[in-house]
Image 1 (cartoon, protein in one colour):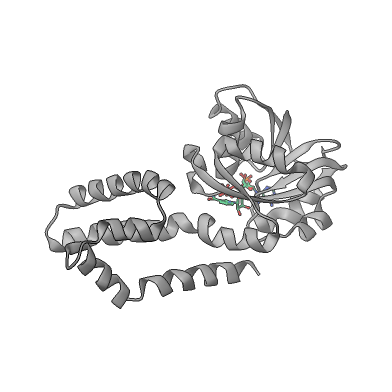
Image 2 (cartoon, rainbow, N blue to C red):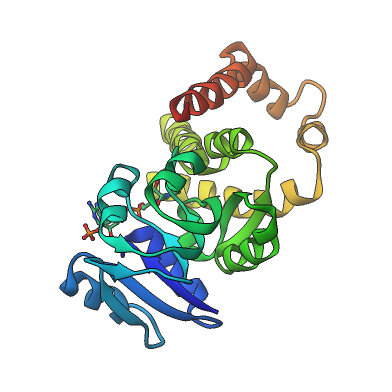
Length: 249
Ligand SMILES: NC(=O)c1ccc[n+]([C@@H]2O[C@H](COP(=O)([O-])OP(=O)(O)OC[C@H]3O[C@@H](n4cnc5c(N)ncnc54)[C@H](OP(=O)(O)O)[C@@H]3O)[C@@H](O)[C@H]2O)c1
């Protein structure tokens, strides 16, 4: 497919690196030098174009600018796209429709792991584009199509913000180890190994069964889990998702 990526930032680069093998890319931005720096980081040639008066007729656009830049970006583009894919956080399809003319609209919510082709990306929008959307975003990791924008916004509070929540857990676990006397470098190695090993475990077991399998009666894990429960770990995360979702409304 011919794809046009608008806004040559971090998310656009992750996407372009994933998409360049199978698709013909054009990268559109407001700064020619940034566009050149961007395309140098790709392994295949990609066309570039300046945003000013950019003609979008019949194109498949992947919009990667910051949400606050939607109106300004849209004002510089001309014509009607075939499909508009938007990764803009908290920006509903209604707003995209007001700003940019397109036959189809799809929202995508990737996460930071896109850089390593391991994003968990939530998708929603025009059902007619579901298969294409899943195929495009599978190039940077896994995808989940949801039925509504409300679900995509809730998913953002889990998988979009999730890397930050897990980073807090990782840092706190390492701090705990250091507090008890481990070297910082060793504590970080342990945490990194823990997260790598946890991915296949959670893919194959329900979290409750996983916990039960580690927790023996009166043992170390039971003592640790008890301490987490005393500190309301579950309600803290449930509240975190509620607050993050609340920000998208
Ligand atoms: N990073 C993530 O983990 C993540 C996750 C999910 C969704 N997203 C979404 O991805 C989008 C991009 O985020 P990012 O992290 O890639 O940010 P970024 O690296 O700062 O890139 C933003 C891009 O938007 C362009 N831009 C900003 N203001 C503009 C304007 N007024 N007119 C034209 N272009 C403008 C910038 O152009 P210049 O280079 O010329 O400044 C830059 O290329 C955001 O909407 C965000 O919600 C990001």
